[in-house]
Amino acid sequence: MFLARKLGMPGDEELAIGAVATGGVRVLNQDLIDYLRVPKELVDQITAREQRELERRERLYREGRHAVSVRDRTVVLVDDGLATGASMLAASKALRPQGAARIIVAVPVAARQTCDDFRKEVDAVVCAATPHPFGAVGIWYEDFAQITDDEVRNYLEMAVHIPKAKLAGHV
Image (cartoon, rainbow, N blue to C red; front, top):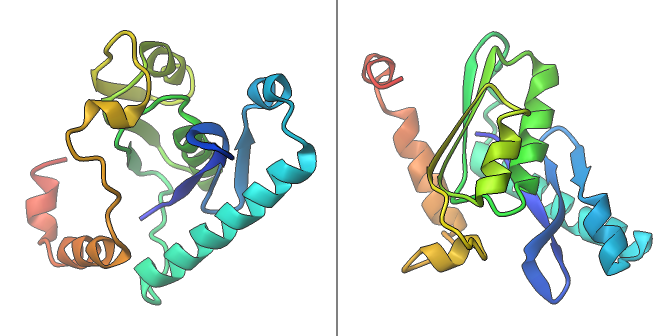
């Protein structure tokens, strides 16, 4: 499990002005921040809030378990979609220094340009659909409701009990 949090623009939370990821990595879309004239103090406040939420979720979801080493492993980063790609970029930048052998980004829907841009950042990109015009990730879902902490914990618990032999056949 590896977490990243979008730094949403106040009043338009789906618009990412940046992101934070496990390990203290922060990525900012400085061009957008400058264009929207977002004060540095506000960016820092949003960063602090999202960092606290990321840390809260890590404690809750890990339940005392340590992070698995990614050194010399292939890591598949999955998200519900890529608009600006800020969260995914923060995640990939946090994993590189940890020695991941390969980083693969996999999403069901993405902005075509964002998908193309990621091909320069990671080893492989799988974007199932790149509709144009793109808009926001949520418009491509019938139900875009966020899942609860309990649902995440249940999925992680189920994953712990999947036999390694079964996983090896699907990777």
